[in-house]
Image (cartoon, rainbow, N blue to C red; front, top):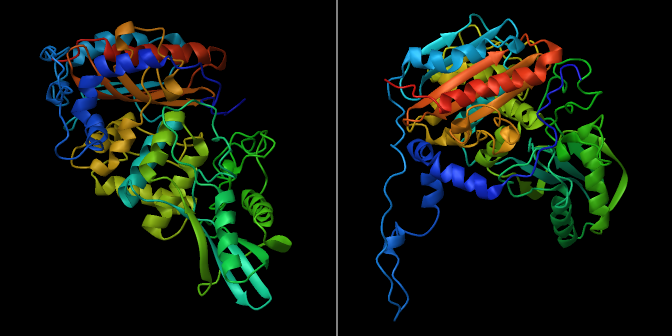
Length: 490
């Protein structure tokens, strides 16, 4: 288990009635303040749509009493409220000194709006684990936009009887083998994007080929959008053999997982091509020989395509369930968009440039991957605060998916079976990205306290004694809960 990201484990069934009640009644003010609900509400009805129950006319001949508007349940959340350093210290200082967290614990808390940090504890940098996904997702959304999709295509080369159909990977992290295939992670999600699958691509390709009189093809596959090593040299050598993560490819299905449901395939691109070949045969096209690795010719004729969900929906799932493979694909997509190369190094350069362009100081932080699986990653908690502020900034609506995807304490995603030990008032008032490696536990997110004061926080411990990892995670959860249950404003 050394180095394993343990966030991909079984989760208990969500109590949806409790989830809805808490999110609407407790966290509603925060959701409104951050604009989470605005886009959702705007998607229903036109300009004349009713804005409240009182605006809905009763059916003819029905006598109904007037609708009474309920009083506000809480003060509107305030992202610019001044926080009290001493109050925050009283809320979480003792919890962060829990011996189970080890000897290196960092914390930073600040108002959601503005700049500066109200409360800090500890010094230096720490291993961020999966909180890194917040940074990767923000950079990808900034460069590509929330509506961007990734296309998997087929093109046709050659003439006469010598025709080659080439399957071209577009770096869709969630491309599936079929509509019946399951998502890669076992963590339940509140939302599943529409599925793009290679079986549908085979059917579309076969239909187009038959319309051109083509019944037999050789098959090539092109994964050249990404270059450089498929396995990050800063990962533990056991990660791929032990099935912690797949080799990263611009062309794969089911995130490189073995069709048996156990482990990963050694060559995700070839495996995807083999699945496609079988589907093409089933659709009535004869495939001559075995699939071959190639690069599609620029002059090749387009045949068919399938598109990924929009990037905002990819980020929604990626952050909520802490999907390592999807995060690594997005890092390479950052490299493609910013540097013109789909490599790890290009992705790193793209992330740094996006942060610098938005005034986010890396402050010595070094990130070697997109998922946080690397134990060599080092991050200042203040970097996470600044990235969360950037994503929540009303002037950056394209980044909103980062904050709206954060798991809700004790209810959703990678926090669904956590945050049930500390202050009960904190549940539903905290949304955070988890970070878990052997010896590492971290949380970074947004909390709204009992007075409606909105704050961003980052809590990190990277020298957790291995026998105490479960207790350390609970201690970290308790500290985050305490931010939601405190009176932390002035």
